Image 1 (tube, helix red, strand yellow):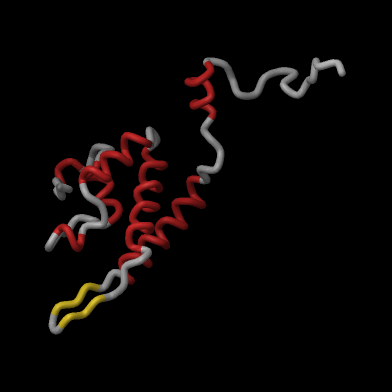
Image 2 (tube, one colour):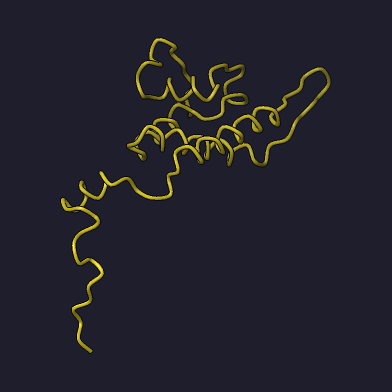
Length: 130
């Protein structure tokens, strides 16, 4: 069963609570219907993305995909309007995507994986003789 929690005292650390705070996903009533992502989903996003910026962008991608099929609902006096929230998240996603420009991996990841730089002298040299 998914869980939903938020502790504002923890927003100083790059974790689930800070993601919830920065994405405006802090009010739950009832949590199953109004929270963008569960605690488990936020924590999985953080584990899969070592960079804070990439984790935030991935969380926004997940939120947009989750609510892409949602529509505004009204049953008598009760109504849920997801379109306003989704539009704000979409705008934030576009801003972050252009700001962070995550299309190329950071050079530090090349050093970690191969322990040598991605670019090196004579990298375009072809020694194959046909």
